[in-house]
Length: 313
Image 1 (spheres, one colour):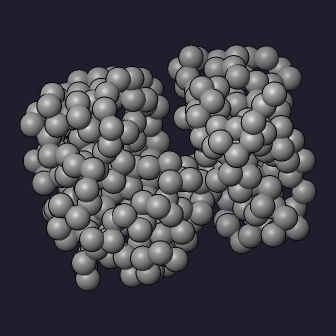
Image 2 (cartoon, rainbow, N blue to C red; image 1 turned 90 degrees about the vertical axis):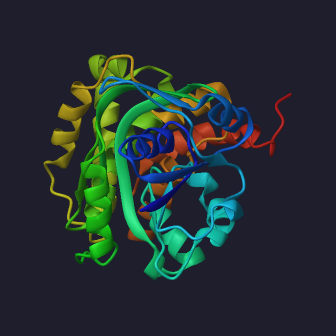
């Protein structure tokens, strides 16, 4: 397959790097010093599943240079998706399909609006990774998983081709979801709760789960997401909160969510597509979301400041 990884950061760099390591034809779309490092020194990935290096690595900041590709694997943050969708148009042919890995549940619909339903699959990943230096990704926790599927839930030859490509990729478990909407909300229940409570408290997961008060807050925030999902017709079972808390208990104690790290560093974050989405979708479904409401409204001034839309005295 001819594959473009649009956004070669902590997520795209890892999964795209594994595909390149397995022999797939991969082009990385990156920018700035990260792009320069990849072009001159290759892409370095330190991983608990085995370190590797892609050198030389095919990388550019100009999507028009890649030509038409079979797959665009989208690794940008959720708030960057609308601009990314416009930028990737030169790569989209009649048979090209796009798989977003952004956190949240709204990415597929954003890409459908921009590119058309026939080009979009739903997708998600589970990994604890970060870009630690230009051209350098570190995978520090979680067994890397990527899940994707047709938005209508049906089987497809293109999803199977992607699964087979990942079958040859070391350090990745790939599967096709029977209902990608359920899979997206299962992850959303985890990541939006952990991101929101983590950003609010600025504490790593080991602290969040061990302090009784923050553990209770984390669990209650998951319950809100479960209620919203069920009201919207997503078949999440009631036991999903307990299962997710058990998963949280197995995470490395120093772990943090990417949204939390961005908020703490004063960078633009996925606040709108995570905590904000819970509030927005809860309102649509007629479900009260007071915990996520406090998180969203409490973090919003800092988010506006990070986007140069608000000045602090």
